[in-house]
Image (tube, rainbow, N blue to C red; front, side):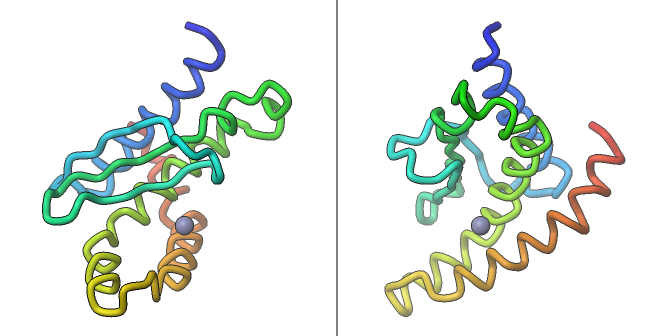
Length: 128
Ligand SMILES: [Zn+2]
C-alpha cells in the first residue's frame, strides 16, 4: 500500500468508525474522491434516499508538499467533522426547501467545531 493509499484508508476507516460510534446508522455512507478539490473534504446527501456521500480531496490528503502539515490527527479530525456535520442532513434539506439557500450552515458548522473539542476526544479515547 502506498503512502497515499494508506492516508485515504485512514480517512475511510474513521468515517465508518465515527458513523458507528455516533449511532448514525440510519443512512448509508459512501466515501468518494472529490471531483472539485476546492476544500479538503465535504459531504452531501441524496434527498429522501438516506444516502450520504463524504468526499476527500486527493490533492489535500496526499499532497507530498503537505505530508507534514496534514497529519494523521488532522485526517481523523476531518473525517469526524464531515460525519458529525452530515448528521444534520435533514435540517440542511429542510432549510434548502424553505429558503433555497444554506441558511444556518455556518451555525451548524460552529456546533461541529465544538464537538471536535468535546465529543471527538472521548470517542478516540474509547478506541474502536
Ligand atoms: Zn463544517
